[in-house]
Length: 185
Image (cartoon, rainbow, N blue to C red; front, side):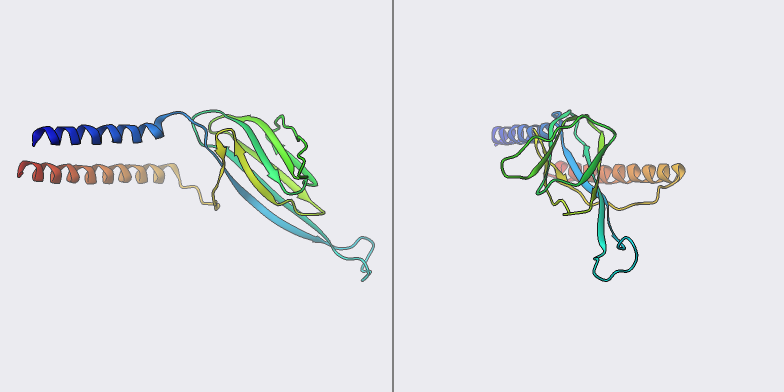
């Protein structure tokens, strides 16, 4: 019976270590979000002639971040149509290779771990529909964001201390319960 238990425990330990190593191995992970999206309706130039339609002007920003631990190479941002105007911040080298399907592809050579790139778009014709953001490691994940008030450092420190105290408390009692039941087998 003990030999089966030791085989089971060693197999379980091996699976657990393999699962943990998936998260430890360096890799790049891209996330993206739209930080703002706004449309202006500009009045027609030269007065209020009813035959001239108002002019829509749309602005939005796409932010890409590498939250991984490895450099992300070959970043591609694809739109169904070419944006009217765009600018990268911070300034980066990019290219716009032609695609036979007519879609617009913006490629950036690399993004370092923890680095942000924001692309500001200004559209006065057709709004460019985003198709995908990807790198050599795979597709980027879209995340939802919301502005949040920044806590003072002292409040953040108290929150952090309470968080770690709670983790310690739960771990302590889990270990005590396991040891209690293990001792009564």
